[in-house]
Image (cartoon, rainbow, N blue to C red):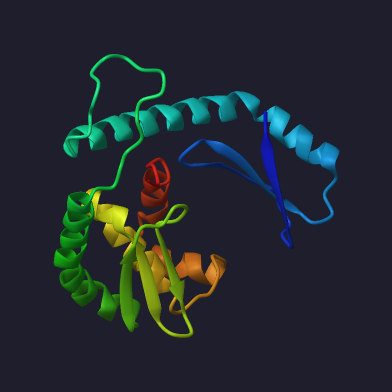
Length: 198
């Protein structure tokens, strides 16, 4: 079982199964021993294997659905390695239209609630995240893929990034604000993290 270990100035250890390939990432206190980390992983092995299976099945189902939606099925025979989703110009244009049509309504709704609005929003293909924010400039970047997903995910990511206009990290202040703005944000985070970043 391959595990990525990230040492951080934290008190507790955290385990994350990271999409799209169900990679195991451990955030561990800087001084924690290797044996303690190994024990932590070993005790959770059955849960990890179930979570990895579930995430990989969801990834494969989503890729198949997106290929079908974009007319990119190809060979209908069974394949151990089905072709990956390919971004076409049409898919990019459709995703951009979908996001741009939703943004004015979302910003009008959430600007007064959050109390800050971005100075600029950029749409781009991102390989490992759903969005990002530069609090100093007020710029937000959104993954173009959100335009091909359920609208609740675009709303969640936008609120998440707008909250970073107040809070740099994901500490208590950030979590407190997110819970006030969007009480179901943790469930939305779980749901979006089961999706595949294309």
